[in-house]
Length: 151
Image (cartoon, rainbow, N blue to C red; front, side):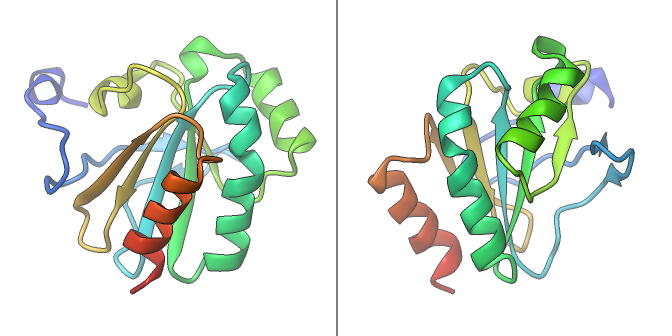
């Protein structure tokens, strides 16, 4: 990543979502948002209680709406540890990709200040919503359905 460019990125609704390269737990590199569906980008850590609570919601979206909504979880690995991430995946039967932000660069790029933080990116790569806090809230779930699933 270009450090000079990163500090100038304006993360807000309507702007293009920054791209990044991160590896998942199997070592595969995620490079681009899919252009055939919306993407839910969830920043989380295994020690975060609200993050644990929303794992079932993210699994549900991934399994039920995978043709309309691509779910990815970016672990703040720089504030977590790999063993805990792997244990989280097994304990909560995570079915969506977990990407490892080992240096915290993508979290900084997206200006994540609290966990969980979730971005919804449309099929054109634009940010359409930023959600702070646990996705168990009915209001947040309704926003995701309205924005990404009603197309």
